Image (cartoon, rainbow, N blue to C red):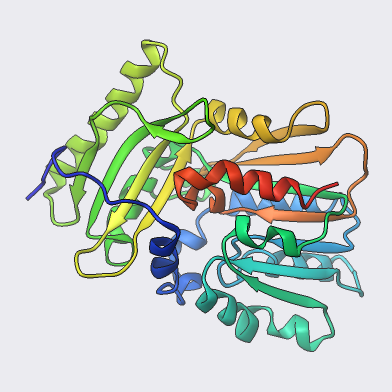
Length: 317
């Protein structure tokens, strides 16, 4: 039975995130990792414009998307010498699978690959600054409610999360958040939704419609909404899943606070599920890329997203 809006969501911590993601070693086999081909197409197109000396992949999970598909694309276009790879993910278990499986063939072919587990904000100092293009992939808030089968996005995020409840959580907490003056994501009001996997379809649909209605009401009232926050939990299981699906205005506002117009240009491209922000230095031509795609930033706990962007900026010159 649904618990409606009464239960409070759990406290989000880095430790809780690590516990959750360490349990996702089969990540590459899930539909959620493969239903945003449009995002990857944009990333490949933007990558091809850079003569890469290195590729820094942050939050790459097991490496099955980036950098693997980027490296395969380079080979298909006749690149005989692969760039240096720096691969990161929050969870040690996922980094090990990337090392032992998805990136192993490139290592065996002589590619220089460095593996660094840990939160992006914690490991950034280990990556020297260089002229790099940042490719930042973020899920769109409207795509959370609306599928687009004609563009290879067959199921809305809302339905996708509920269908994958065994992985993400038996109970979801969902609410809209705004960007505070301290560049943190803060909940707007007290009307959050608590949705359980065993709720009836009618109850699930009612919660979905209420979230959409709340967005329209707040927008008409002039509230600047940054994102929809989703938290997934399962009783008796360590860790928690968290995700943020951004509005275009919300992600641009946060990114522009870090990558200021006196130093960087920002270009936004959209596909069915995602937005890809391409960030380039005004002064330097990029000789490498940093990929933070498939909503990696959106999965960072809300109090750490701004500091994560600041850490990424230090990798760019």
